[in-house]
Image 1: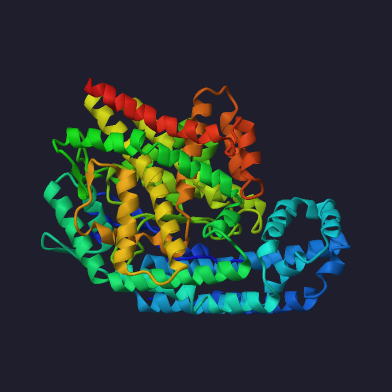
Image 2 (image 1 turned 90 degrees about the vertical axis):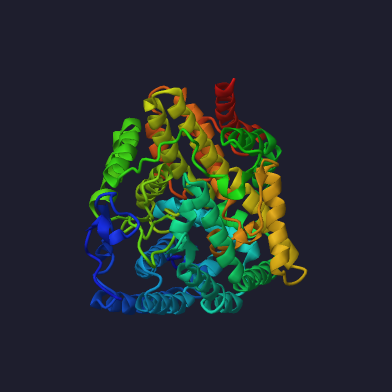
Length: 616
């Protein structure tokens, strides 16, 4: 059973915050913040204490009732059904507690009271869930024929996908005592280093043209129209990362070794095998994706950055110019009401039902949008638990990319809401499929805006920005995956120095970005701030998987007759109850077909073709 990942004690019941409270977001209008009271009124609420006590009691009862008895219960489907139902109910309760602590912490990771609450809850949930480790291990010791018979009948049949996924874990599971040891030590091992990374990154400050900034606004300056501002922010990032590089190197070495130990004990051969298993995707499918993207580097990123350097009047782009706006790009900031209207209009035009699912995120405190000191950087949609609803975190600063981030995270959110009817065990979606709705939401929004584009310059700017976003999602993420492979493979032979990590980073960046991007001194430290390397090793290929999948899916949509939207919503409602082959079959798509990835990459290539044609 997985306790949620996460992110002054107080009552978080307000739904909106004025832009003045948001610091860097002044002038963008009133933006929503989370109403976490949907989970618990406050950290000091008696409800938190009550649910912790209930979870501890229910876990002990479940262990007493079922440990050592599941093989026998499997011969009595009603008995096994009751056990699974009890286990599922407890999963929801533990998930609610963990989600609340993580989200409260994400709102202000610099607050020591929130950090303590988060740490205390994680420790308690780890201790409670230790009593439950036997459950899945014991199910996997049931004879296959007996279990197949049990899950083929009655209400237990709906859990068949969950049982099938459990069976895939069987070859890599250890005995009960070792699993319990791994689980309990995670709090002081991987969990502790994840938290150290989070709190260190949140506390970093960068001096940019006399301003002292946190990481999010500093990174935002890399897409500023002023080249001096871009260079200053890039140098500030390099300087601070360099000052902290020994710590980030230690964290990376420790977590890489921690993973190697776990993989070795469990019998995983390749460094990414455990991620492929968790994603329910076959290694050859991922290998085909990676190879297809790498072969397309010259036709995609190399070609585009050469075009961009020409547009910018440069021989080469410095690394801080890679995401610079084109001269034709408007510098107008998009306020929150317009961002909401833009995204919701695109969703509604595709499907009124989809828009109806999205509406509560804006009106009920399910989004936390403003930038604040201490707030977790980046963006995410946390599913919490099926008995509640997802929460979206943004750091909205009014850039066009921020609008696309809203469209992206809202896609995750509606996917999670629609999948909730599957329940705690079947709602979670593998990462490879979890990006489908988010990237599709981005594409809907982009296509709607492109249709409204006026002259050639506006269309060019929009196409260029979309191409850059797709390169960042596909090319960059596959380069990140290649970097992780290098790191984890090399770590098996011993500790890595900061210089070694920096050289590995530069090697994959040079290959992926091409000769038209000049990686200036300092860029060798930029590997250190990527959170996915820390929190979810090898997560990154899921972005490329999702983007290429959506490109192919959108091509089907454009040529489809009526009924596509309903099939799409059915796919989202399935959550994690179906394999990617089953989910894509109604659309005539198959990710195991080598041509599948070429079709998705072809969409990006054709956009670059159009941009090149504008120069003719």
